[in-house]
Image (tube, rainbow over all chains, first blue to last red; front, top):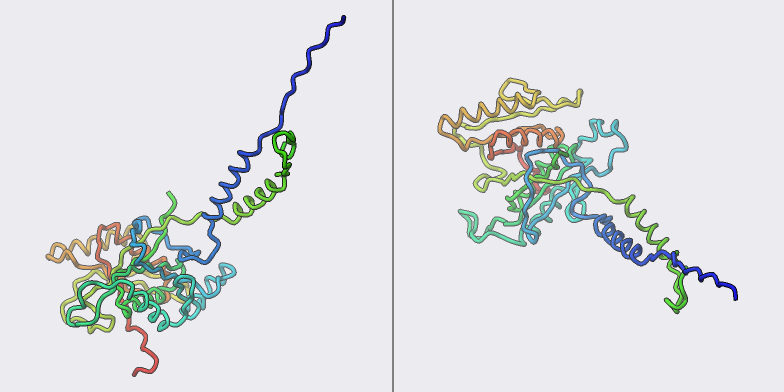
Length: 173
Length: 156
């Protein structure tokens, strides 16, 4: 009787891809949620840099963001440096994805927003006029003309909004 | 390998290779389109409650430190002035603002604001630079000088 060679052990080298698929799903979920492609309140702007800017702590239910950006983005630096680029007529305001080119349309919208929350006591000297407790954040592109921010502040004043913040980016450390 | 399965493990026999391929493609798409947002901060600039946008100029002696920002359209640049002195350097401007404000503090007016008076055409980044410099001086009260607001259409 001959000796039988021991049977070769079966080696299962199949890779288990279940954890890979799990991780890929999580990564996908993270990227989908983090990279929001829709038009949001924090529109894509190049904010001016300021190391003394403080973190914004806002009442999530009672704030509004006014974005200031050009109607048409300049194609190159030469266009950005063109004096016409600094003309207020080439700029617009944006609130919640809706653009406002007309100052009085902006005022009407801000009056509507201001009614969300008003102060408890009326303005001294009046009986039925109340200042708004809504916080306004003005996020303006760094190259936007100062006149646009002035108009935004004046519109807030017309709408009895006085709690204004101006947005700035913290410089990279 | 994906798809190489023992029939005893998964009697239905689903081929997961296309699933993993599609997920890879989606991940690559979202990774390429992902943008990291800038860390944002803010400066408080609450409007004064006791002054209207059409307020008459006060007859009291103005106690303030004023920084003027002038725009040269031809050169496309900003000139910063305090009084008649032009101050292009940030460190110099910080020192001048601090000295001027300290002078008001010594006169018993610690609440004297720093007013930024700028041309409508100057870039917003120049204004924020000045605001940042003022904040570095530890001064909280900043005012923005403005002209009259636009008149409502139909009003005289």
